[in-house]
Amino acid sequence: MRLIRLLAAVIILYGFSYLFHALLQILGSMLSGSASSMHVHIIGLNLCIGTAATVIGIGLLLLRKWARIAWLVTVTLLVLNHCLILFLWYVSGTNLTGQVLNVALTTLLAVISWAKLTQERTKKLFV
Image 1: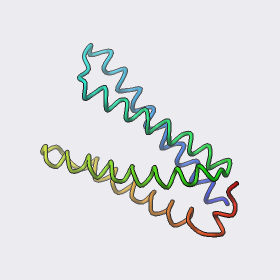
Image 2: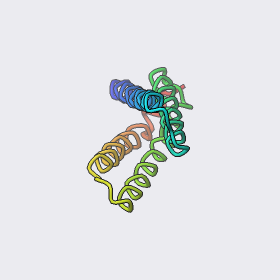
Image 3: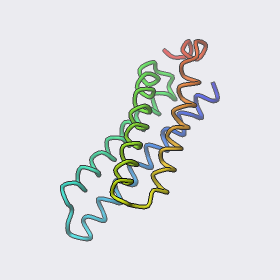
């Protein structure tokens, strides 16, 4: 039970980090006076990921069945998303250090989530 609560807290912090990053991007766009359409899409994606992760993390804290299922789907999509971004950065010749770290940490979070949240005794805790 404690691991589920800790995982939920980590997911909420993960969501807040995306929301904070999107906020900084919005402020940067406002201060520079220009934002490309790609930049706007990235901000929107960060806002969506941050909102979804925060809501799902709160649902996991409340032990909701929908949150367990939603998180497993979301974390899988996040790993795929970060792998795609890593590939795009590789093709463009950008420094990959930050993206490799994103892929590694998101994959670690996915492995822990899938290992813990798919156990039968853990499933019984969710309403």
